[in-house]
Image (tube, rainbow, N blue to C red; front, side):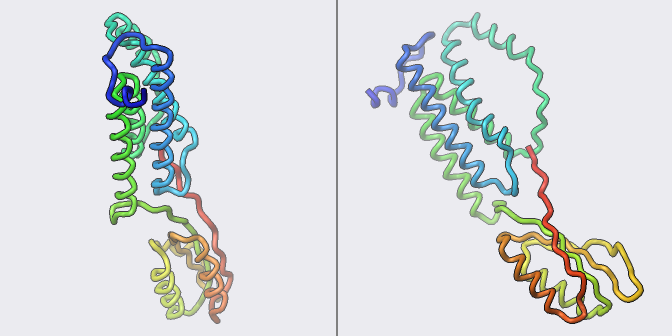
Length: 226
């Protein structure tokens, strides 16, 4: 029976209850796989739980719509009219997120029109490609953002501190000098680390340097992009 499903059924208006349940469950499994791949390969520290749920639920809704429409042209125009009155205001800024939501919609369409082999094969290839891109040089692995603050009057020592931070961090940015005291200058840096546990070693190193005072390290949130 499962082989018959994979071969694809002839497209008709109203599928049987068993076929409808199988199609919806398949859409659920495939969209959930895509959503978890999105979470795993997400380059930002935070990810949107609502966007994660939207990927899963959108596939179910799309599959139901495709099975409800069938070959009925009148029903298709009715659904288009119903969707047209809904105003979507979510601004998706990251093109990668657009592709993932489109992939979830695609597996819903494939399941709804009983193209099970297409949906399964497409999901497997899409997920493997997303993982390969994540581990490639073009990928964006999760980073942790920290602000490092210290005071010193020794310019040469500050240069050594900068060289150390550059060597230990994935990305380094020197902020403008914001405050001067009578004896010391205050320096602020932004660093990005792949492993958050390294920040303790950096803090202990700065604390051990003579001539460096008021060492503070503040974890900064990375803005979430939808």
